Image (cartoon, rainbow, N blue to C red; front, side, top):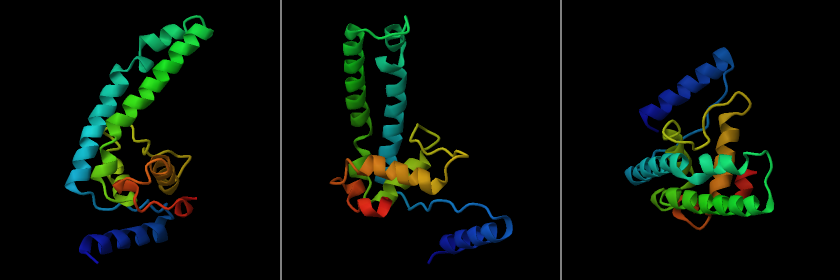
Length: 157
């Protein structure tokens, strides 16, 4: 056990004993490859949100009169499908660059201020609950990829 681990454990125990603060979700070491993939994916995600029509005036125009007619619904469906495909492509490299569920989570956590990895603190959820949602949402559909190779659905219920 390294000095950092012992120190972190001591601080956590002190925090819990003295103030009753909440335990923080554990985070694994992040390899250089996983970290670089999150750097790239974060930049791609931010660009995606700034440039995709679903997040711009094209979307607003569909709702300009407050309703969506059949023609507008078809346009919206196409925009949504295109957005999902492009978003998935933007973050796809993380699933091969990271080697475990814990590294995937830790990589995203270390970039949580860089892009919307849905890991920011909220008063309504613990870090463990946020971690669970993140892991399940990413690994339930990517279980065959290296980042989720150790994902067991039963562990995350």
